[in-house]
Length: 200
Image (cartoon, rainbow, N blue to C red; front, side, top):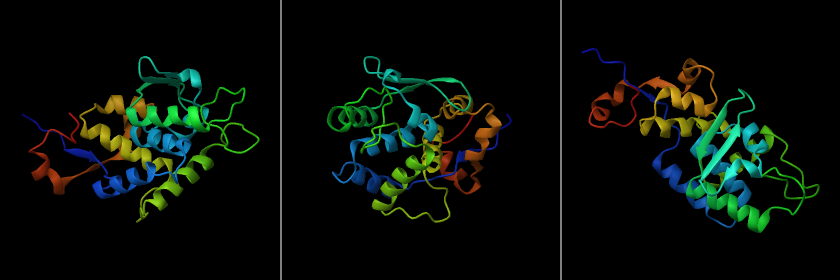
């Protein structure tokens, strides 16, 4: 039998960092809009451009899914509407979202109530939450890209095939997804006792 090289996504957030982030996200100091945007990046790996362009019609509350066409690739993607994401978006729409004739999910919180400005706005939102949580950059990539890395890591740990991860992240080829993957020789001995974190 020939074993493939054991590979895992570069770890991004530690357990303690995740706990600090969750504490900040559940606090009144973070708006429902910003919490929803953060959860989308953290658990789905959505690009900032797709988060900004997300429409109300893209959310299927009955089937608990988010269906949209990726801006960069044109690929259609169906993602699960998790409890954290669903609750944050629901509270945002119910309590914070301006009552305007615009079907974008996320809007500016001050007039003019138009869609968010793009990647830079998401970067600011994510960075602000990370700073409030006391997360240090430590040479790591920052902003929404950092959340994409973490989302990819979670998918690998849940034994999702690399081809599926590539499709969710909007990569035309799995080779592009390899930027999230690295050799993990030091952890082989411990990871051999678990089915998580490997690509078959």
